[in-house]
Each structure stands twice: as C-alpha cells, then as structure tokens.
Image (cartoon, rainbow, N blue to C red; front, side, top):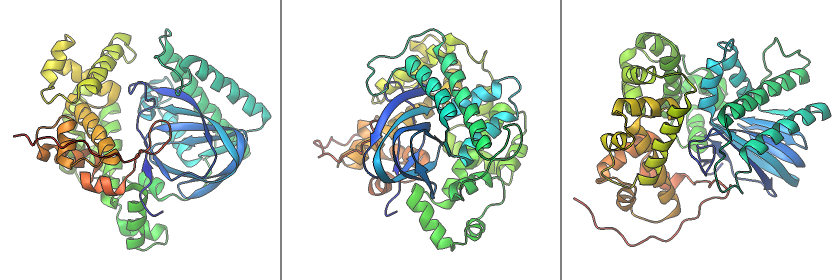
Length: 434
C-alpha cells in the first residue's frame, strides 16, 4: 500500500447525518482502493464473483456472501471476476452498542455479539439462510428506502425502534450462521478468527501495557516495519492509534458503569486517573467526570421528543457551522432549553457536547476542502468558521491527530456515492482576519 487507505465518511447516511441506518445498492466492476471504514456496515453480495481483503486476510466473494465490517476495518476489493452487485446496510455502531447494552438479558452477550462481527467478517449462506436474510433486507429497504435515490427522510411511526430490532436480528442470525458453518450450535464456543489483524490485535490488547515492540514481536515484524505499516494503513502513529482506542473504551466505562476513574484507567491501559483525564480531555474536549455527569442525567432512553430535539439541534449546527459567532447559549436559547440540557441531549444521541459537535463538523468540512481544493490552509480555516489559524490547527490535530498539511498530503476522501473526491482549483483567497 503506497498511501494511507481512503478514509470513508463516518455517518450512516448522507441525507441525514443523525440517522442510525441506511440501505443502498452498489455495483463494483473493478478492484477498489483500500478503505478505512469509520461507519459499520453489512455488505450482502447478490451477484458476481471476486475477492475482498479484510485487514490483510483475503476472502472469496460469490452470491449470498454476507460481510460484516466494523469500525476501523480496512478493506480492499482486489479481484472482480464478474461484476459484483450487492446490498449495503450502513449503521451507527455506537448507537447499536448502546441499544444492545440496554436490552434486558444482554449485559454480557452484547459485547460478545459485536466482538463476533469483528473477528468473523465473512460468511457464505446456504439457500435457506439466504432466503431469511433476503427477507430481512427487504424489510429494511421497505422501511428506509434506497439511500442513493430517496429525496426525503422516512416519517413512519416507531421507525427507529423497528430498524433497531431488524439490525439486532441481522447480527444474531449472522452469528448463528457462522457458528453453524463451524459445526457449532450457536449457543456455546468461541468464534474462529479468519486471520491476524494488527489493528484488531491492538484493539484487543489495548488494556495491557502495550508497546510497539510487543506488537511487532507478535507479528514477527521489526518495529520500523510495523510503524510503517500502521502509518500506511491509518495515517496514525502507534501511540496515537492506541490512545484513540483506549479513549473509545473509556467512554463506554464512564457511561455504563460506576467504576472510579482509577479503576477505568486500569481497565483501558492507563497508569492512573491523571493520565486518563489528560488524554480523555485532549481528545473528547471535556473531562471524564463532566462527561459522565452530563451523560448520566439522561431521561428514559427512547424519549422521542428528546431525540427529535437533539436531531434538530444537530441539523441546525450542520447548517450554520460557518458562523463564527455560533455559541452554546445562542443555540440552546433558540430551542428553549438550557445549555446543560442541550449538552445532555447531544451527548446521548451523538456522544458529543455542543463544542465538540461544532468543531467536529467544522473539521470534517475542512477535510473536504483540503482534499478537494487547493485553498490555503488559513482560507480553509476561515471558510469553516474559525477566526484564527491557531484555534483551527489545535482542533484539527485533536480530531484528526495530524496537521492540516499532513492530512492534505496523505489522505484522500471517499464521497457518499463511493467515488473519490477530486481536487478542484482554488477560489480567490480571503482577506486575513484580525
């Protein structure tokens, strides 16, 4: 791989960044570039034959092949013998994770179910299994519409609950089909790993005192070779990647347990609460204590009014992110709630408070401009709503763990339709502010 894999959009649907799932059809006629998937998805091959490489492991593709791709998996279709036509179901992995944990009797099984998708990414269905999955896919299509052709959002009653149930059903039957393929009854036994993945290994062992040398030794690589591989795959250094994973896990412990910060630090691999707080605050934007305090004020988990308000606020931020004066007091007042209540709603539905969500939107928009135009970095900063380059650079590094220039030189973006963004000529430079 000569350059980092293309980083896909993290949202489930281009029409609505707050949606939990989308359904679409796609066709691939030639090998693709390597892709890093931020949003989880199922790919269901209906026609065609070829080969896909998932985290370095090649897997054959044929009709009725079902593929589960979890966040941070790297895939590349390396061979297309006959045009591949497939169904693509993209979903919000974090939302499903929370929904599973809140389901009665799923306390332990939820994490195992999601882990299973990660280590067993491909299953070839027999005719009976394929018929069942065909029916599930048709239910999702009828509920969601086809993402690439629909013009308006679905307004069906109880749609979110219906979609959630269908996604969980798809995950469960996927697990059962894989276990039946291995001669197991679906109730006991551990999944069979399809191949060794460096990223999966780091994720699984991130709570340990993990060093680059240890991972390199596990994969019979030199430290320099492993560093180069990670850089080529993700654009991140080993420590930046490890910290990203640890903070992601710490967020779950803060939300779903009463463990102390010291206990959580030990669970995810930090020396103590101080180190956890330092890395957490740097990446998330608030302290672990405040994150837990705001998040655990949540009302009943499926309050529809709360969800609609949170989505309306999110939509407002997406439409007005370029306003330099946009601030939490202004937006909370617009929706008739307090700043604390607004942050509670946003944290529950998007896992970001106002400041983090606004900066996240701005930085993602900046990435599009960096990848598709030749605008000066300072002009990009002003265009997405920042009034000085220093604040822009700090936020860019916090969210992307690289500088804007490093991003422009090393990462390309894939658009929602699957095509890669082209670099356009620059507009006239804006006057410097200040």
